[in-house]
Length: 614
Image 1 (cartoon, rainbow, N blue to C red):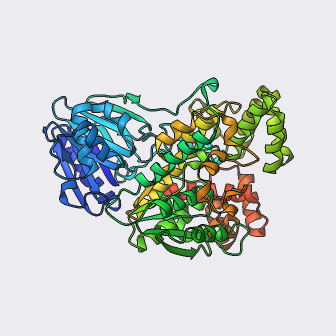
Image 2 (image 1 turned 90 degrees about the vertical axis):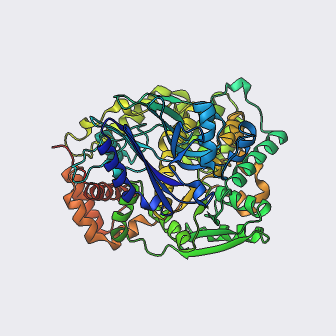
Image 3 (image 1 turned 60 degrees about the vertical axis):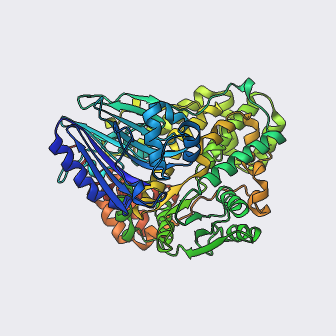
């Protein structure tokens, strides 16, 4: 896990200056080593966090043995030893780094190698012969790649800051700002970031970039599988065993490291499975990090204790702390600088707290359970798509059982019925709600959004809901904050459930089996039943990383009020109402989140030098 930056263009001096500046700005991503490569039309930086092959044999930029290619790489390829055996059995490798595997594989396969790789990556390779750069990002976008183009050329980096010039007044992407302030949505606009002139390189894609190119032409090498309903299979005992084996393989493959590893454990199903697999199959010491809010109704300590008790032979070293009082005033600016964008709620700060615990323990690699909800239909709206399909197919017994046992209430049932029998009305109501929620924004602000950038998914189709979760509303947030919080502490985050082979297998199972007996993620619970204590297996609630936002706002009320008063994004009447409710301590969750978004955007503008258009 590292930091990379690159320049592709006709001004060598500009390129050298860019990577030298990036070298200072990305030191936290790679404190162990650094290197720069320059040629007439390219400059490349690598900051190294040594995880595999700790010796100088893993140094980057790394050249291929043929001398034609030079590469900087951020990530981990978990099957790289297998790739050596399959494709390069007679190659005289100098060391055992995955970097060396990739550059030699690229020299014989080029982009065809991407389909064979299991892992996460951001890759930049310079071809000395053709004078072109190859850029690629992993299937889920776990490793960040930001791109900016100017008249001077192409600028590429692992983070946004190197792409912002010193003293530059930065323009925001107003669609991103409007969507975040009104809806709380972010990360769902494809290549668009919160910055007007900076883009995400798309996940699951690659591109060849020449110095004179003015457009980035990307090619997708992987997409979430869409298998026809008639070709899907039931979740029988054979399927259960095959899914189990893929999950175990995914978890164990990600223990590949020459340094100590750890996991975060919330007490939920997903992280408990990761802990259970490691306890059974790994003989490595595993540091376990958990943080709870004791005494609250969201305290999950009992589930954490049950997982530890169930695995007495696990090589667990437990690190447990209280979240105590969340201090937004003292911490928000720091986390905005780390994340480089506004974010959804203080749970991301709480995750950063866990990364701080890991750093204090000297851990460089952390596994977690993120991604399982997105893959296995763990969210309410995803479950609703399955209920809708059952209702339309008149599988009323399954529909009623699931709805009753999920205890979702009358509103949830009515929305499901509306989607089933009047989808046009439901869509219109959803669009109307978007317009109404934008009404809180300052006059003229909503008109600055480009609604053509907002994807419209068919919520009656499980595949569309699955795709939205992985590419828009959920997973982009997770991979963003996991990478930034970890790398700000020089820690590599890994998500075993994002092994693409798990998704490809889950896609073959009929949707009904993702939700049974009112239990979301039924496939996952059943396939990994042996790793779950009964109290965890039977959980139907979904807490997430609970953080008491409203209480935190009350503690920092004067500081928050000062920021709200400076707010130019909401209608004056809305701003005044929020101030009054904060001072009178009558906030509910929606109002608290409105204040949070106001604070987050205001601090982001200050910390990153962003200025709203006049």
